[in-house]
Image (tube, rainbow, N blue to C red; front, side, top):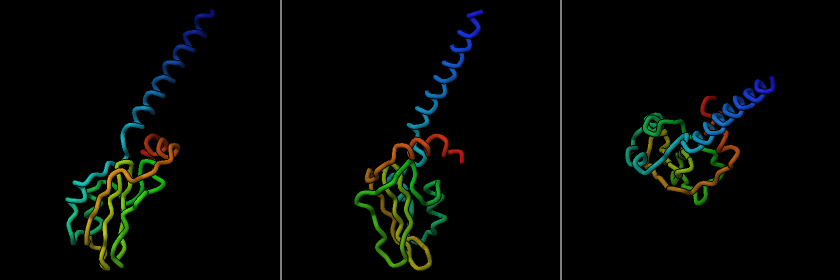
Length: 127
């Protein structure tokens, strides 16, 4: 009779191992990967919607980013929009009609909250 509880414990241990391994793997896959080729592909005159299609996600901060050191700032009165992830920051300067004037990328200038990072790369992907 004692073999039945032992086999249940083994099964639960295996399930727990699979869950932990899955979470660990998901933590290595960024929710948004930014790079300079995206900034190069975004040309003056594009709309924010066009730029969003190139980037693949709406403007915002991803992968648990909570701070941007030496942040890129919009240089025009039209303002700007940006994306930030663990790979860096992509900033668009916009004119008064919300059309792109310039697109800039700066790598590795972000600070991350570990709990937010894990949340976004695991459960947050599906919400």
